Structure formats: C-alpha cells, structure tokens
Length: 186
Ligand code: SAH
Ligand code: MG
Image 1 (cartoon, rainbow, N blue to C red):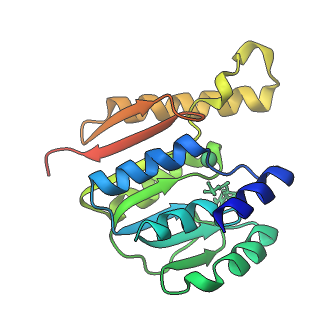
Image 2: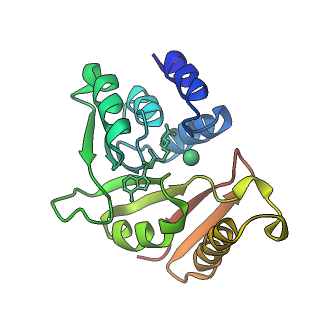
Image 3: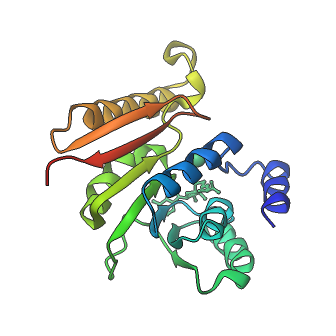
C-alpha cells in the first residue's frame, strides 16, 4: 500500500514525506508512546497511513478536493484508525480531541497559524512535529518575491519556536527540515 502510494505521489508530483522523515516519525511515535495524532495536510494519505500502521489513531485535515477524493479511497481499509476532516484546517470550528502528537505538514505560509490554533489540543507531554522547514536550502536572493516571502515566514516561525518560553524545540536536518517541539514546565 505505502509503496504504491509513494510511486503515485512521485508520478504526480505530490509532496509526501521522504523516507528519512518517515523514520523520524516512527522514532517519535515509539519514543513518546504516541497513540493519538492530529495531522494538518493529508494529501493522498501516505503519512497518515504510515502512522496508522504504527498503531496510531490519526485525525487528518485536507482542503484540496482532488486530494480528498484520493485520500478517502486510500483510507477505505483504515476506517477505524484514520478520520479525514475535509476542509481548511484554519476554518474548522468543530470538536477536536487532545492529541499526543500534532504533525504540521501543510501550507508553509500558515505554520504559525496552525501552531497557534492547534497547540491547545496537545496533551500534556505531547509533541508538535513540523515538516518542510528548510525550503530546500534555497538562496533567498535567487528566488521570486512570493518564495522570498514564504522563506521569511518560515524563518520567523522558526525564531518563534526557538524563543518560545513554554516550548522547547529541536531542529533536524532531515528531508526538507523537521522539528520536534515539547511543552516545558506545565
Ligand atoms: N502529510 C502528507 C503530505 C501533505 S502535502 C504526506 O506526507 O503524505 C500538504 C497538503 O496540505 C496538501 O495536500 C494541501 O492541500 C494541504 N493543505 C495545505 N494547507 C491546508 C489547510 N490550511 N488546511 C487543510 N489542508 C491544507
Ligand atoms: Mg512535507
């Protein structure tokens, strides 16, 4: 299943998590005994299915209609383990649980907003994992204005994480840059 999804993503240029990123997620899931995951950014469901196969219960947000259709199809045999919430995560105003892990892997320009909106749903002792923080090591002087703004936003978000008194963040040079954030003293 995962193998064919990975090939599909490759053939259709869908930005799924890389192999090292999956291993990283697996270690986090094991080390922190993660059971409940909230994922922002489903795409075709590759990372969600991976986490479900590690024994997690996954709730995942996707706003893109085409992705939703495919994710639904791919989740058919994971009904008990994965719930897909269709729509923009930032607009969602219904009930959510408390999660052991929140995995942010969606529109880079919105990482700060995702963090602000969903961090209250993190269980005590839980972790927030972010993907794609390094922007392929692009040189900000050699890209267009939009990309430059995105790089700036991501960098501001990284500074926010680094300087936050209530959270402790480690950054990893895995894939396109990943991080793991824990809440301190509560
Ligand atoms: N986690 C997936 C890859 C996700 S790609 C994996 O590794 O397999 C990022 C996805 O986030 C895209 O499909 C995009 O449509 C979705 N997305 C971006 N911003 C979003 C938002 N605000 N709400 C819901 N989904 C969003
Ligand atoms: Mg990603």
